[in-house]
Image (cartoon, rainbow, N blue to C red; front, side, top):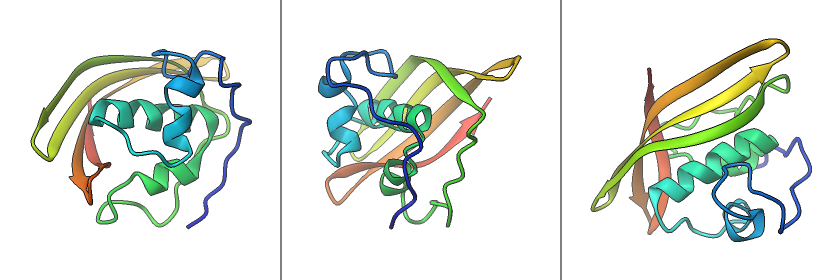
Amino acid sequence: MSFGVRSPRPAASAPCPCGRAAFGECCGPLLDGAAAPSAERLMRSRYTAFALGDANHLARTWHPRTRPDEVDLDDGTVWEGLVVEEAGEDGDAATVTFRASWRRGAERGVLAERSRFVRRGGRWVYVDGDVG
């Protein structure tokens, strides 16, 4: 499955788009295919994938039952910040509630979502979410 990557990756020492740590210590390894140690880390890597336009990572980390045939990314949207409000795991299921700030030209907004994840084959995958 190949969907493409829109933007160059940050240097390993550069701040990660998700805001947690340096890219090489944070989302970089996950975008390279490493398993996320938690649903929250997977959600952060998916935010980073949206920020960088990495449709491959988004498709790879989406549950096959709910994954769209094509991962369409809006080239005009700039993701500007992420705040994780709550994260919880219960065995092989988890939820992560977050707010992601975006800009598209002069328009600005915030995406608020409660995302659901499951562990499948030992790896966390995104199932779906409630936008609110």
